[in-house]
Length: 341
Ligand SMILES: [Zn+2]
Ligand SMILES: [Zn+2]
Image 1: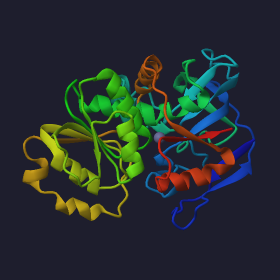
Image 2 (image 1 turned 120 degrees about the horizontal axis):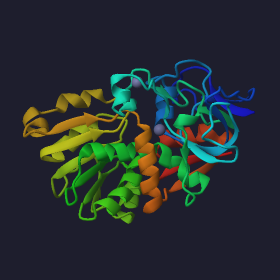
Image 3 (image 1 turned 60 degrees about the horizontal axis):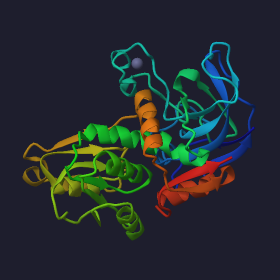
C-alpha cells in the first residue's frame, strides 16, 4: 500500500517535506482489530507537534494521521461488532488500558497508558490502517467522508473543550485562535447556547471575517480589548501571548480552557507579562484539555449529525500532505484540511 512516513523529527522551517511517500506492506489486523481502507484523513496541528518533536512519535518510522474515515475490509476473529463494508471513523484515541483509576471512571483520556493514533500506532496517512474495534466509531450517514474527517479531532476535542468551560447559555465566550476546531465550536455554540455572544480572536483578517460570517458577535486581534468581559474562553493557539491577552479580557470568576497538546517555545517570554492582579485575581481559572475519550467522539458525532455541523474544508491528495502541513503552519487556508485517498 501507499503510505506517508515520518522517519525523524525535523523543523518544518528547515524541511518543507518531512513526510516521505513509500510502499509499505498491508497491515495485518490483530484478533480484536479491524483493517480499514482509508478514504479520507484530516490534517491536524498535532501532526506539526509530532514532526517537530513537541509530542514525538513513540517509534520511527511512523504513519501520522488521526482523523480517519474509511470502510472495514476485514475484521479479526474477535472483532465481531464490525462487518466488512461498515463505514467507520478513528480519532486520536487509539487505545487505553481499561483498568486504571481514570479508565474506570470513563476518563480514559487521562490513562497513563493512553495510546494515540498516528503517534503510538500507525495512523491514516496511508491507504489502509488497522485499529482495535472498540475504538472505531460509526459515521452518521448525513456526512460525506471528507466532511466527517475533521469532526473526529477538531470537532471532538472542541466538544470536550466546550464542556470543560462549563459555559451556560447567555454567557460570553471567547475563541482565542480561529482554526479548524474553533469554527466547529462556534457552530455548536450557536445551536446549543443561542443567547451566548461569541468573541473570536485571530491574527489573520481572513479568519476574523470567517468568524463574523459564521455569526461571531465580535472579532479582533489577540491584543485587543473585547467590548464585553468574557465569562469563558477557549485557546487553540500554539503559542503563549494570546493566553496572557485573553486573561486580561476574562470576567471575574471566568475560566480559560487551553486546548493544545503542546505550546511552542518561541514566545514563552510573554508569560513574564502576567500581572497577578490584572490577569489572575478575582478567581479566574485556567484549565487544559488532554486528548479525548471515546464518549466525547461518540457524543459529538451524534450532535454534529443533529445540527448538522458541516465543517468548511479544503481537499488535498495523499501526495500533497506536506503542502497541507506547510499551509497549516502558515495558516493559509480557513477551515479544516483533509487528505482524500
Ligand atoms: Zn488532532
Ligand atoms: Zn487506563
